[in-house]
Image (cartoon, rainbow, N blue to C red; front, side):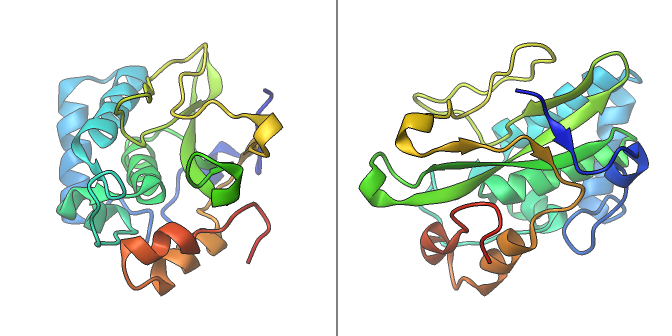
Length: 204
């Protein structure tokens, strides 16, 4: 699939988006400095950041948690969040390292059946010199999900089944969708958020 950046200016994918995408807050800044201390190679920095968010930040739906985190600092502090929060954290780590990063979405089945309805799923795209834009999904692996950092063949969390009404959107947004952050802010707990998430782009 050909990805569609919202902006042709890479600088638009490097800035903070308060209060969600931050890289000068204590914990996020500390992690960025830690990653930079390991390597100066941008591709390796991106891979380290991705694997940190994928493997060390629990997915709140997987753990049946009630907690909602939204911004990068609270997500790293609480060490948990749903896909959107994890994508906000990864974008913050990447942008703070000088690596352009944006926000991508898929429409997936909320549960295993069409009757269960649909919800947006959030992931990231990033830009590396010599590679261009490519997507990664820091959702977190578990049985049946094996997302990996790959600059050629995509290895994302969810294979999109168009025959079931799922949609793989090609857009790379410069900011998190307002409908997504609104649903997170207005849900009382994560169990409510499971059903309050937007179902598609353009909703809300």
